[in-house]
Length: 545
Ligand code: AMP
Image (tube, rainbow, N blue to C red; front, side, top):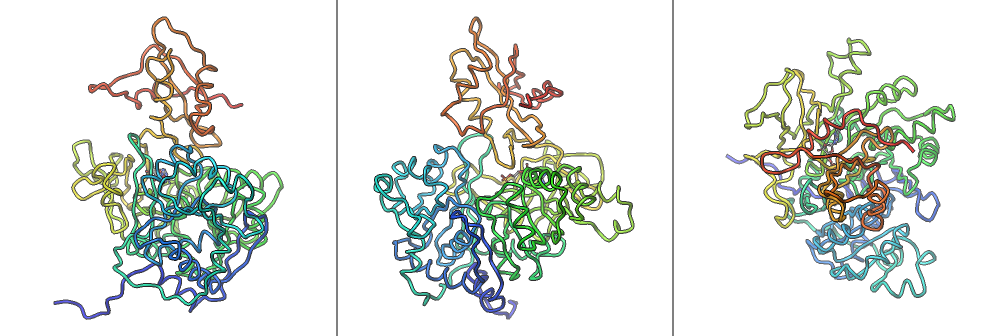
């Protein structure tokens, strides 16, 4: 027997309609690329998103086609989130920190039709525009007075002005209704091998993920909050915060390009931010600034930290010095991204502060919707509450089922998604990542592809074999160390090898150091055993300069 309830698809545009009707006066504040602090309401957001939806449709974008962004967190980016997905097209958030070659590869794979960019990235657009074969229009996310002019502008075909496009449309527009399983946004993730893989979210997965994300034991967002997402909107939809804004009507504060400690702190104080979210590296910068100036947070009470492991010392510093609660969270691009969040259970309220810290250092408990298990190398499920660690597998309605266009192989294993992380789960269900089975390096919350770095080194005439491994780093969490076996009789210095990377990769991808060895451990199938190599290099310190 079927239930007898209304069938209404879960659509992203519903969030916007809800925000306009129920939280219309709620504020959205942005530090913009132009340098000003911009203010608008959810009512303005809804109106401008309708105008923008019409403008994008007028550019010829069809349902399902991809509209890319290369942009900071601002109200204009938020408007694109709703205008693009709301009309049935797919929002593709490009990561501006990627090397231009990778960016081009991804945009070509996605077949982006329109690319909207902040003026910060104008030099990048000029460099890659001629290689983006599917992009028909480049939209500068600014007003007419800040538009590029002259020869440079003439060289980018189809260059348009965001504010002009919006102003040319009225806001008489009704959001279309369609199947909730329709694709809404696209993010690429880089794995250990091969090309980046596209994860194509749906309206349904996005809404369910947002509902779960707002729960008190997840991100705990309410209308009374003032939320400043430091996590970029090009990083897995800023962990859902642009959607949670409309869902809850909370005040949103977008930091734009100002991600340094001083700019962030000023915004936290001026706008009375109560909650934030970002990777550990950002908080290191902010804490250093606050500490140096002997400052305090007057309103900030919670911050979500994830993307890589949050150092326990940071959880402690936030709590003891600033009365800020850290919500340690774990997730992945393939998981929309939220998987676990670490909040205390009732039983911990009576525990000592030290016991609480021990819990808070873990990655947390699965939020409803995510099921997880750990397995041994043969795939047998391991018990919780023991010291046994195993491969972490997950499943749920906002977890990837297949990669975009099928490129990247079948991601599932018997209906579960193997995360590539190694974890333990305690008797209370708190998961703790103990290792990463993947070999990519995570610097400041951003991946560095070790294979890419090795391939370049291997292209040097004096190199026989090269492995790139992550080494712990006090500021960036991890930085790449290049381990090299020279060809017999050949000679090459550390400096020559590092110089060899110039112009081939983004500068910050360059390894911090090179170590020469006689041999790199190999496994039975001839693959490098990086776990063993890491073991051998343990205790080695990267140069700090
Ligand atoms: P991404 O797809 O770029 O979001 O990266 C996902 C990966 O980041 C996960 O598979 C983990 O290896 C790592 N990660 C994310 N959050 C955490 C965390 N809180 N602690 C440790 N590792 C994390």
